Amino acid sequence: MMNHTEINNLLTAYEVDVRFPDVSGMEHLDMLLVRSELARAERNQRLTTEHARRLAEADRILAGQAGRFYQAIRRIADLEVWRQQENALPREWWWYLDVLAQAPVAAQVEMTSALV
Image (cartoon, rainbow, N blue to C red; front, side):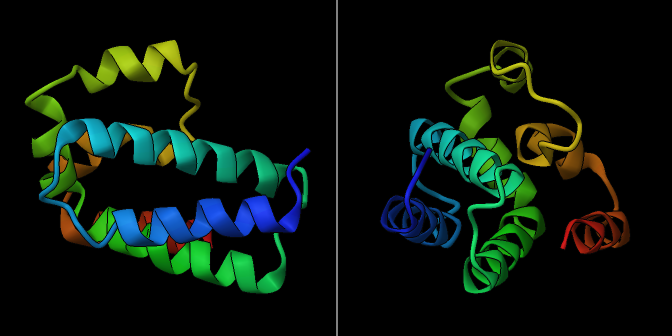
């Protein structure tokens, strides 16, 4: 089980990553793996209120830029294949950037608001 320092380090990395949608797709895939680690910590109720707030803000940034992140990823990998390898459930929406990129902006906002 992760401690608060490990969670904070992962969260900080995720916050930085979502601010740079134009870096390589490999970095974005790493970011999605980090987000999955944070989701595990969240499910295990390891996030503080401050962690949850920061995660929600970073998620809003990622969802709002889904298309840009997906464009970088699709140059180097098939996101659907990664999704299957990770056994990503629909609640793990970050593995569905390809789908989000096709969704109207209003649906993206509604979807991410429901997650907070």
